Length: 407
Ligand SMILES: Cc1ncc(COP(=O)(O)O)c(C=O)c1O
Ligand SMILES: [Zn+2]
Image (cartoon, rainbow, N blue to C red; front, side, top):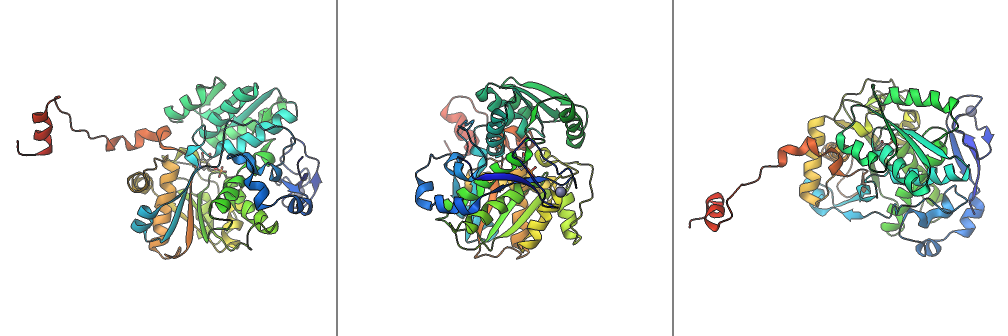
């Protein structure tokens, strides 16, 4: 049984039934799932949650689904105490939430698992999505598991690793000559025309809720407490808002103490409309034309930018952007200190964290969680320069020549 009661407009508060709907008819603002928190608080305890499976579905009662989940084994990813990286950056209590460990190698499995379950509940036989790459893979994988037909739309410039990562599940893969914002615009037209469950359009309110499980897990893994600081990347900004909502809900349900987490959002300088607005002291996002190697977060017109900015501001957090070079350096630093190979977006997170600590915005003694949302092999070309092997003949002499060891 789900405690979700309705969809509510984030701006004017108008309520709608739990249907495949994502914008308010009156003010065109995004809709959000609301719950009967009173009953939920009564029914859910730390002990009860601890009995659940070691996947995101241990928090099923806090998600808006009625039926058995479309589950490919997502969630309960490692929260690693990153002492080596912490020492390098100047943090005493740094943790990495490694969500590249999910079945399709990004946090998108969380959001898709919820949205795909709803797609099946609503009776859709076809699902679709507009994607920068990771979402396409996750939708295709979950559609295979749910036996639904999938159409996935990506910009034609998407990395080969991401195309293969989606194609292997045999969806209808459509590459579009244009950037993500063009793909998204096209998909918004398709929603009107076809009776498909668009995972991140008409199913978006449900999709959004999947990301809350990231903060449920982090709080539980920290021994039922919220971090002092969180740093997470933004494309549309939705993930960032839901990490906050997850923490807020836990406090509301008295599963953790009242939350005083400072939320830091990061982007690549080649596509940083949210960070630029924050730095200008504004809640208004000016769209940009993306140009960055961090293609997964290359959204120039972020749908949830305003809400992400509000979270960063109201939580006493901040925003930081890094160049592509800094992102690559961040990827290498994370690999070489913690043994975690992340995609370009993770490099943005580590690069931005480095800056925020260097400028003492995030302080040495604060419990800080960096969200690594995707795994490295999908964007491995950008770090191909690390491959510098010593080539030898299969003899001891040849090896010792290379090692410069006297024979
Ligand atoms: C690896 C990765 N991290 C973060 C994001 C940001 O997600 P959101 O659009 O919710 O801000 C994305 C989006 O595609 C992504 O692929
Ligand atoms: Zn409204």
